[in-house]
Amino acid sequence: MLKALLALLEFIRLGITEADLVEKCLDLQYKAGIDGYWCKSLPALVLTGNHTTLAISSPQYNPSNVPIQENDLVTIYLNPSTASYCGDYVCSFYVENGVARHSPLFNQEFIAGAHALGHLHAMLIEVAHIDMTFEELYQLIHKKTNDWVLNSWTISCTEWRKICSI
Image (tube, rainbow, N blue to C red; front, side):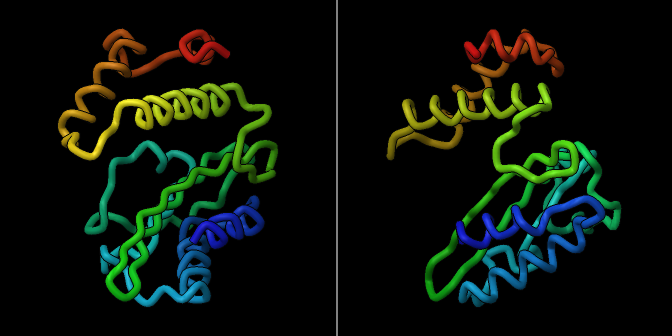
């Protein structure tokens, strides 16, 4: 599946839509031997541009036909299953100046967000353990992010760089 996600990097370009990416995801998963999806009504969820801020699940999801723009975030969620195994894959790609990348290079908001995500991932690796409940993990991450944003839903790129020591 990692190969499928990385193959998408070459496919993502200006003018491609969420609907185009959903079709490409289905094709790549099929070629990788995937024969099902544990969320049967949602084999691929692709969010681009303003849609990346949505909290959405299968009943409400309808891929957009709005083309990818010059500086868009593209988030792809896959949930393949085969035999008795299920997968859960999420990946974000950064479109900067019309070029899709796995890591941002120029856009300061993308860079700050990627560093914040890396910081949260490192915290997850450090604190998570097999006996931890999702609620316990949620509370730790919730506290950390609330500490970062000081009970605000917005934070500047400069503040993120300070928080993440970049």
